[in-house]
Length: 293
Image 1 (cartoon, rainbow, N blue to C red):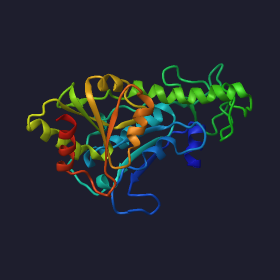
Image 2 (cartoon, rainbow, N blue to C red):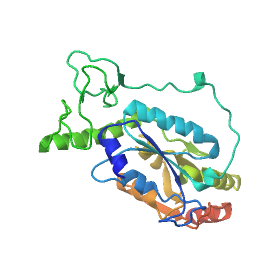
Image 3 (cartoon, rainbow, N blue to C red):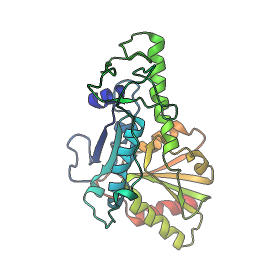
């Protein structure tokens, strides 16, 4: 918590991988759960937002690890990558891509000073600061956990400056929305019921919604979230196209809590399982049928 807060404060590119297990404390150390989401979102002192993403299957863990590195370098802020015990103990075939096939990762490394350079100059598009290589002449400035002046980087206790810096760090995370994919729906783009999942529940939820469609329930769609903070910018548009929404999680409703805090005009039904086990098809399809019939 303290280290992540410091990394956020000094705007350091850092990736933390959290493979979630059954908790709290030692809990169920060999079982799966999705109960660290709120810790990833809010588990630091002060106003300290960071990017949070989640892998969905064993096959896309590499892609999202690469994506975490891309986001942290392009936006100069920590990224938490969530996995879980189910993914960690699973396996799937996947093709190793060549370097040329991977998306380019840009960075903000500054190798020499320029006229009118200030330590807290920010990129107009991302609000990311330049990354000065330690020891570079004329790029000396302070880093650390104390609040800094918005221009010079000197320690500052000025109230208005502190409020400005709090808001600029939050806005920097919001601007990540412009650099992540839009939320997609599967099976149908509108209908009676939207099933929502995130992280390692993709396989079980996708299979259950597919079965519902094969049984004739063509009005059931599925949306899977891999980007959790910030959320894709079209999230509300997707929600508006369905009459009912159910959020399925292997916890007590943490993502549902996040969605309620950001989208006040929607009712989010919860379907939760906290047994150290993944969802199975029968319990999911039974719940979905209850909500439709």
